[in-house]
Amino acid sequence: IAVLGDMLELGSVSVEAHKNIGKLVAAQKIDALITFGDMAAHIAQEARTDGVKWVYNCNSHAEAGTVLKKILQPDDTILFKGSRGMQMEKIIDDLIFGRNQFYYVSFILSDTGGAADCFNQRSCAYSNIT
Image 1: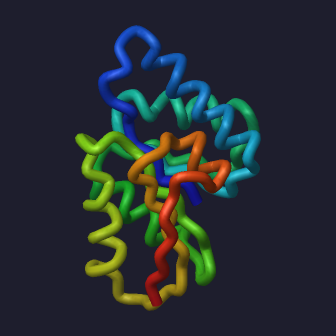
Image 2: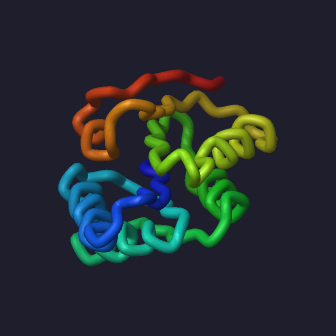
């Protein structure tokens, strides 16, 4: 599962960059995509067009967290990525502290590389919750 937010401060290449990430999500055979943010809607649109079956475009952290809790299965791996200003950790906090079921999932949290690096498993840290 990929949970992706806006990539901020990209200027004139922003729309195209977000669309490219949507194509990359589809090419990497990601099972489900949850997006959050105005520009991330372009990620969702491209991923859906390129064949990702489960795509959810959310308008808030809470909505993204709710969708994630509904689709999350034991042993799922989740990639969270968005610009620092998107505060993606709010979705993680809701998942960890607001849940009433226990899951064993892997989180991929990128703090140095872009989303493309994470899809290629570079510049990412992994952690688990149970």
